[in-house]
Length: 169
Ligand code: S3P
Image (cartoon, rainbow, N blue to C red; front, side, top):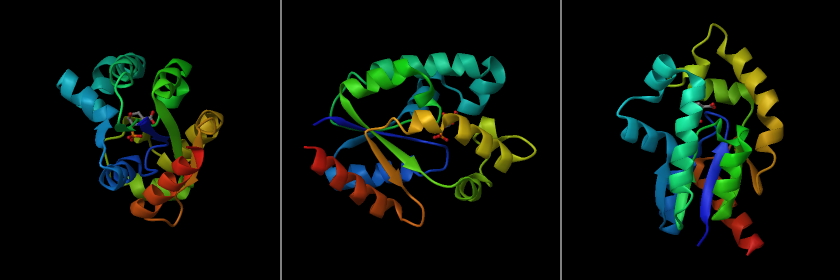
């Protein structure tokens, strides 16, 4: 089976939906950010702080190269993965790209008590979410399957994804 690759902005539920999909389909889940933290031995926050975003993006692409070669996985990606065409090309080779959407307000609510997102450590995170989301929208929309998560539980979203994938088969 092809990999199911979950993309989407921070706080759209990729990790939770990934876990549900993993349970539903009996596939292993891999989280790119977790793999980076394990391999580098430091947190994403620290990578941003010590080496900057562009170094993080290089490490991210290297990790994608490694993971996208595998099959039968649910792959949960970081919100900025779609920005590099090279990343998506690699992930598409063995995978179906799914993108999760939520409104800026919902994203803000889901992320506001969480300090592990370096890009949202600003005075006005909601404004930042709106700006980043607007810029990234065309990239997110390129996914094979686009899912609105608004008002849905992770398990409802996972079921919707499964139905869409079955339609493609
Ligand atoms: C990022 C999203 C984060 C993480 C990093 C950068 C982004 O992952 O990769 O902080 O650029 O949107 P999540 O989407 O899992 O929060």
